[in-house]
Length: 358
Image 1 (tube, rainbow, N blue to C red):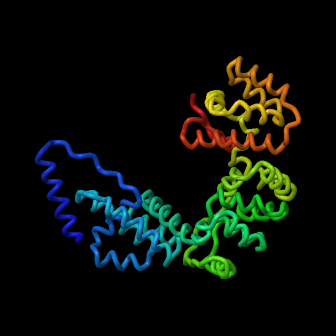
Image 2 (image 1 turned 180 degrees about the vertical axis):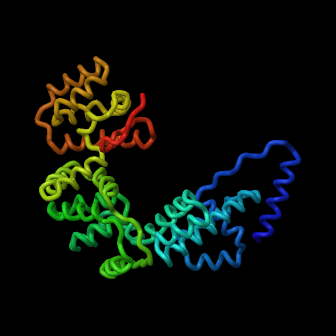
Image 3 (image 1 turned 90 degrees about the horizontal axis):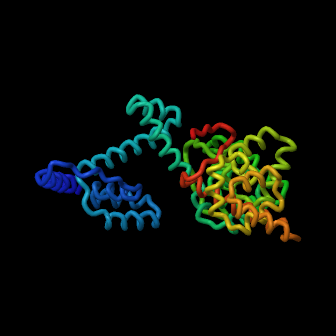
């Protein structure tokens, strides 16, 4: 089938070339489309052998992509197969010899930058395999499975799940355990296959077991900052207060890599003006009930005179506000800010390391 696909693709390309002087732009394929292209190129017999090692959901997704794939020219097919071959070789080098061995081999074969790109893809793929069954569970199920485990175990497992789910579990833990778990996640760098096997054995009664054979980077300060960004303000404050008591440097480093409501004062004026437009005025009023004067001044100086006066008037008549409502309003505003940053519409300074060119 691979030969047939290549022949048909080449014929099609030749026909198109004869009709015009300009080549069609190269097609950009998604990961699922690339997988489908590999399946088509391998042919039915070899593809069926691969299917035996895949999850039913993945087989279904790839089959749908194969059905939708349509025409691919020979150049695109060759690029996809080359990438697939490189990934296979990289995966083998990592699992058999470790990351540093793989890096040495790949740099000699493909050059430094290509080796780095391949390793990033493979280590991400390997990490996704470990505790993959945990990502399929909802927050309630995760908490039920982990609540009675040791903080070190919880930290390891949560290092492998999505940040929002990790935050959901941490928010339900006892206060002293929250601090221990967050500190544990922040200090994880790499985990040996033996340690992973032990933890997965402990969890096997509650979830399916997946075992890998390579060290991969998990947890760390950047990850825990992402987790903290997803926590409610009460849990966030409790964790930072407790963490600061016995490891202030770690607490400060985590703060540097995340964004909280009070960090609005570090934003440039244009970014403040942009996110204010998307905020509910009621949220601005509630959030300012418990903010310091610096934050208030930053917001008021970047509103229209009319809007600023309206907010001030509402602040005066808004009384007996629950702290929970204030924190939720601040969290919604922070959510808007983070969303706009992800879209590239505003800039957030993290840890004082970013420079802005006006």
